Image 1 (tube, rainbow, N blue to C red):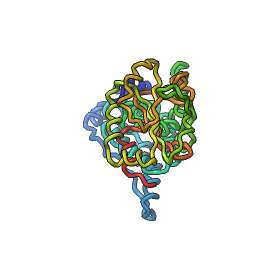
Image 2 (cartoon, rainbow, N blue to C red):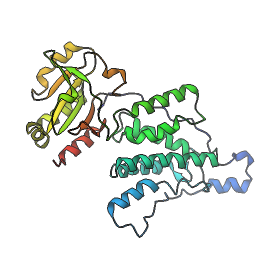
Image 3 (cartoon, helix red, strand yellow):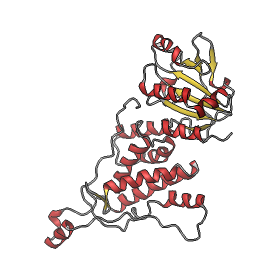
Image 4 (cartoon, helix red, strand yellow):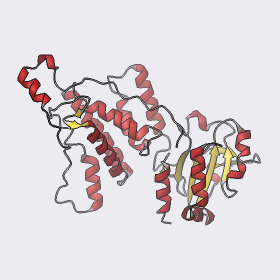
Length: 328
């Protein structure tokens, strides 16, 4: 388990229903609403001309929410429904969509998230009592940015939060918070070169990240005594596929401690394999959130031979699955 951090608060609720309130409805309308049957989720339909799997996934990523976010929809929006669809179903669809995003190019994923924001915002602009916009603000924060989410991905969250930071309904304090989140998400984005930094080994020798020469580098921010870190260490040491990558020199592990208790870190040296690059941050630069945003420990990055980011703060399962299917 990752160290718990507080989940980012959801955006303020704009209204409890899509209509103007029960007090303004006639008896017939009230009874009709009481008998409302939840609508099925309006799944996207693939055009018949699409036969290639990659094209299909790209189409799904970009058009997944077209049906639910039509501004002409006028269905219940309250604690139970999002535009007539049960909230639990909408959340499950969001989780399913995240899987789709994981199977398209990162540029397509970013574009698709940005499109979702624009569609959801248009729903609010057309009907201020709609809860479509606030629902997607909440789900984006929960799935993409919560450090405990198994689907977290700052590269997905960035196009959403960068737009949301300009939302006119925010207070200045809220705006500052979301602007900061956008800035942090912009650090070491997938496809960019990771920021270099220096670290000291147990003997005080200074190294730089870019000094490590290997086809792939696993950057591992860890703490001594961290249970979740120990679980990762065990997999890296004992899993035959991953340990073979390390012993063959295909994968270098750079294991860095970023906190202050250096004695505790030194006492943990017997736990760390000798073939790893184990070190600590003597200048506490990594804690400043200026070059890396380590929001929770452990945190895993995968870099290529040019130190370009392949996976950023990836959930452990996602990282291990990638390594299991390595082709080099």
